[in-house]
Structures are given as C-alpha cells and as structure tokens.
Length: 344
Image 1 (cartoon, rainbow, N blue to C red):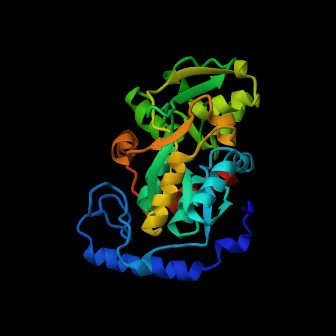
Image 2: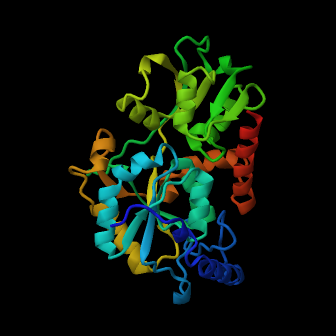
C-alpha cells in the first residue's frame, strides 16, 4: 500500500467526477420528494437524514484508489501512522489501494468529499453534520468498546493556571480562542450553551479562531489567549504525549458528553464497496495497532453508529446557532478564517 498522495491524484479524473456530480443534481432535484437539510444535489427518500445512494449505476463511484482521511484536529503526519494498519485492512477487504490525505481544515475535508476526491474518512462530531449535508458523508462507525458502549467527549473550557478567570461569567471582556466555525466543542456548542448562561460570544468577549484544538490549547498554555473551549479528548491525548504540562491549565467548566468522531464513506460509492468498507471498520482488530497505542485508553474497537439518534444533540446545537448547510456557508467559513489571519 502506498502512503503518500501525489498532488495530481486530487485532480486525476476530476472533470469526470464533477460531470457526474452535475448530472446527479438535476436528477435528484426533479425526482426528490424529501431532502431535509441535505444539499439540493442529494435526496433522502428513506428519512434517515443521509444522502441516498444513486440507483443509476452510471452515477456510482468505483475508484481504483480509495482516499482516506482523519479529522483535521491535530498534526496530520502523526495520524497517518496511527491509522496505517486500518488503511491496510481496508485495502485487503476491498481489493483497492488506500492512500492517506491529511486535511488542513474541516472545510477542506468536506469539500474534498463533496467533489469526490475523498472516499473514506473520520469527521469530528460537529463537522460530521456538515459532511453529511454538504458532502454526502455516510457515518457507519465510531470508536467504542466490544460490548457496544462508547466514551464520547466533553467541551472543556480551559484557562491558564495563573488566570483570574474562575467561571464562564469571567470571560466577559477577555480574548477567547474558538477552533473553527464548524467545530462543535470549539465553537458551535459554546455559542449555544454559554448564551444560556448569560455570556454571548463575540458580544461579551472577543472570539479568535485558532484553526485547531491543539492551537487553542497551546495558545492558552503560552498566554496568547485568556481561555478556550476545546474537546476533552484532544487535550487528553496531548497530555499523554507530554506536549505540555497539564498543571499549566485549569478546567473551569465542562459540558455533558457528545458523540465522538464518526467514520464512514461517500454516499455514491458502489453499494458492494460501501458494505466492504463498513465491514472493514467493524471487524478490524486493534491489537498491536497504532489505533490501540493512541486511542486504546478510551476504545478498543469500532462499533456501529446511529447518526439519526447519536447526532441529534449536535444538530440541535447547530440549529440554535442558525447554521445553514450550503456551499456558500462552507466558503464563508474559509473566508472568515482567512480574514482573522490577516488581522494578526
């Protein structure tokens, strides 16, 4: 299995993919009776909130190489080695080559799947809903335990040990790092939950988008930000790797549990290929793998995921924040981030 992706891979066959996507839009628009929040190129006739797989065989993808990615949370080069055994197992199960893609942002990851350049992926909890509605993502698995249980993650509001911030109300007038507009624990959840506690982001405190959870965490450690809402699991992994001294940070508030990262594939892969990928996730043995080493304290297997049920809390938070799932909104996320960078 080859690990590195030549740049031309992203554009090889790109025009033909776009042509197929263009075809599927008018057909679904004409025939679809239920779509919900899905982009108008997709349809959801069975009501599972996921894009239906095309019935026209001409619109199905059967790539010789499957492109695999993990969520754009931390250093992509680190996670390529973590997922290498899983990628090899998917290759064995499907008979396809599998190559790694390290997305630099949630928006880039969604756009890669939307355009057909990304086939199998893990999406963070908040980005999962964007992936589903804009990219045609089908979540089929998440990390858990063989008995079917799982540990999600929480929003941790952190500040430096020497900070005078003790409560959420103390954020007023401060400089607070959010991750990206689409991040659940890093933006969507605090916007919805903090408002209910009398603190409105962007009004009561200055929001600065850091781009990634680890950037927010290290920014607090180094004194660049007064506080930051981050994913508990990301911070735990950074502590385990001894990236920073945990005594430098205080957790001043935490949320209820959210679902973890979801894993799945693009909606228009051939059905038999979809089933082989699903089977690969659910039968992969973690023993001795990079996944066991990196995630073994919190999970030991991939378990089936119910998007309709498990992601209801995430969809509710995003609805409260007025999120609209459109290509324009995804482009706005990227533009907003770039503008923040220019101001620094």
